[in-house]
Image (spheres, rainbow, N blue to C red):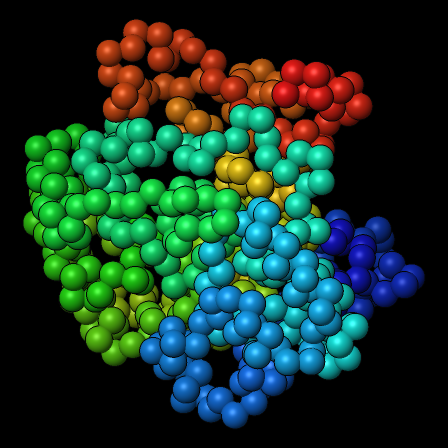
Length: 479
């Protein structure tokens, strides 16, 4: 959706809607309009009672984290029961075909996240089905077969573990890729499963297409080994605690692990990775979690450690009053920052307007800092989501100047064996074949004895569907 188009059915109330004459509501009619016009859009919680299966659900039940978890939608039968006659059979058939032929993630949708799909679509089955097909949240949380690229559903260079995180494990679940930073995967489950998950080889249940790998150590043994490694490796100062999603770690276990990290003098930054802040904010509003988070934040503050929460929101529709309440509660109890790491995806947030709408909803209404937008990783069956580097560069240029500098997100390409790079940092770019080349300034843990690691150029690949005819023909021959 561009700044001069009407939002699609079910879209978040937009700051940039225009009338047919191209004149924004409220404009004074002088001068040429800006590419994007900011208008404050207050957050709203969609009415969950519009779904036949939730007509009798009370507000108290909706705010209850346990109710949300128990009533997650895990399969087609449950989805049909929830939606009733709102959705036509063609959608369910399309969804079933995707789960049979393409899905790399099993279905797991909390009510909170389902409720943000097509929130203004009405009750006519044909119109509602069309709105659900077009909905940006649905596109990545509930993919259907017709979404997928018909010619190149996977890039020839796609991989299950596209960032080679497991290859860089120093102990099970602990990826040491950057010199001063590590990623600690405490578990392999989430409260919700995103179709584009970069850890699709490990996270969630196996699908018809993917037999998932499993963590083998007991959680307590894995945590012991992680803490032991950090104590023995004083050059690591920054720990991202993730999974899966930390919201699925029983709070008493997570708090105990975080306190152990805070006892390590050389650890100065701790980041908790949780999409559940957006997908299941009720979890982060539970009294036991809030009280525990306050204890951890207080300890971090006394010891001079920066404690932050990193969440994952991809569209403004996901930013509701409950999400804002969860973020502000974390800040109120002493968490230093709540930041967002979104993923660029076609049909979700691939226009300047959709990105800016999201950033203003996060920053202006929920106190969540827009931090990163990653290019979607090169996992199997993800080509319909991925953008080219050139498209990402255009988006970075287009959003500059509208937000405060500290709240202007960086669009990054997570290059295999390299790490995060701003999309303009490439060394060379073959636009015809869609191959960009990148360099780096540090060795990963598996390259400590590689004298050429810092001189090598590492390739990254655009989706073939974005290439000119000559490029597509080259891949047809060589791919």
